[in-house]
Image (cartoon, rainbow, N blue to C red; front, side):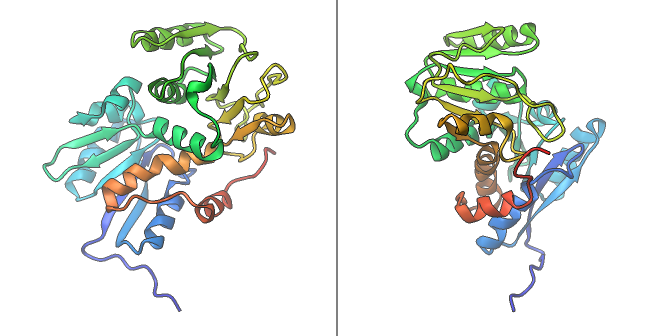
Length: 288
């Protein structure tokens, strides 16, 4: 019989800050890695009201936590709470990973875009973002992370499609300021798109499905969705029905956690089929 996991006086602590946070699969993800590598560590869900967030972050650092992930609605507040911020996080305007350094300073990263690219590489191995234009549905926090990561990786052209044109235009101006070619349209130009990414909540459990005709997409196009509840969104089901490569949102979740785990626990973990199956077993496979 395997000995139960027991916390010690040397246990390395991290967690996830959100409001609410009960829906998060990150404790399941990091718990798997901790057990797999036999690390004396713990990863804890930390529900914190927005007004209490700055004080909670400082308290965690003072209590000896190694760091924390940050989810809705705290990602922008996390940026303000940091003493040091990576360039990618500053460009995105949000932090999803906090590292509490030994010198007392708080460092902030955004690993969402990195996680998206790693998931894309894993689930669509023959695709490269330099192959052609990308179309991004949405202009919120997820869109910002995905757009910045794609442009940094060499995406030649990008189009933003959003229900609020003003929000999309503001993001396009920001991205274009770095020399990128970014357009805003009311309907997605799919005829020459190499990549279509849904960053909206449409298709998520409890939300209306995303209605879009994929027929104009080229046969080699890749369709990605950052939604991972359910695992197979209506958009991904439609893409697979047309024989298109489909990239689900679970891969982004799994990969974005790797850098934080390495910083807090000293080991760069891998995303394996066993890990994916373990986390996926707690997620509805289809909407309904």
